[in-house]
Length: 598
Image (cartoon, rainbow, N blue to C red):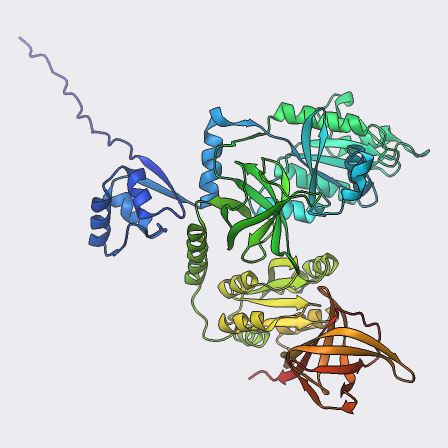
């Protein structure tokens, strides 16, 4: 009798249960981490101490804790920046999401009527008595149509649109593409289409200037079809409205289509999380201090709340709308100007409310410490001279620059020109380019990135120079754009001329102007800081703008010619080939020192 063969069952390999995943956010204390992980605080501290971490429950978590906690408690841990954690939480709570107003950017070719359309939209929604109130320019504004709000971002340009997107801070929900009916699709029209598509933002086409005799909307639609934009009446899915911004024709229809599209794509916000938004614009106001234009995307912002934004932080001192009126509560999609930053923030950075100012300061200090830790300390300032030495030795691969200038036009020129000086050995890279004064944040970024700061047509205050010296950062100041360009060319080629260093001497305010026979205009000044010398070079500032740079022609105290005037003294001075003085102008005196490369 044959024995039946018994099949042996294959051994089942036990499958380890999936490790739980915990999402922690930057700025959490270890006490909050223990609560999140569901462990006792004593146990958490003991395990960290066994791993060499002598900590306190009030210490903040950082990336060094992540692998230790994961191993000790057998879990997966993801540590998110504060802003990302709030945004992720806001979107995950589906039942709390509510419809918010759309944020719209108007783009298109130059001279196709973008500004005229913005003006037409804004003024068509106002009553006459409000016209005089339109004095506050904060880079964005709201209008109402059919009892609903629409937010428009004012003149961002394609570069600013993309810069925001590249920083991960997408703020635009809908793009209105303006195309002139008499001109058709032009190069910047194509650029706008590319930028909107890359950002994944839906487009509404506004064919403008239909009031002109030579207008040909059908030709425009045909050209758009060639660019892949097929309007609805041609069987596509792109909304198209024919308008005349100049005559304010069909503006209401355009607003209606914006709201219709907003309903289709369902733009939503979570009003119950900590206020979270994006910095659209930033500036240093002489009276208000550092301030920024913010659009809140989730939550509600209130005066007195602490916040972080990139490497800046603060407490909301005041909130103003686009009319300059105080605001007590900011809702999602509402553009406002915020006062209370410790420094000028960077456009495109997230704006995030945190529990208190102490938490805000600790988070930002942690970010700065991380930046410094990621880059080895440099024994000396990385100057242009040091750069060309490295190039000669074959050590330099990248030349990092931070560019600051007085006006956007200068920034645009430098951003387009400087990268073209790259060679096979060295790549010229612009880390950051913006208008406005050089700030401590610029210096910290340069310090962390081994970058040189180029300041065009700007005064560098002594306090900023001290910070740059401490952080081993070189700031190169220029008044002539060709000198700046030539210096960068020479640096990349190893042919740099001796460094020109500006040493500040003093500051005086023009308080009265005298018009003397055979002499001309004399500026009656009061010395606010330092010393004004007869041999000094001077720079005249009107507000934030440099209006003159040159030398002192004569310097008097009372009726006597003098060689110097000290702080707290009055003086009269004339300048070489300049008499366009105004009371309140500031005169900065400095001397130039040339240093040859070692």
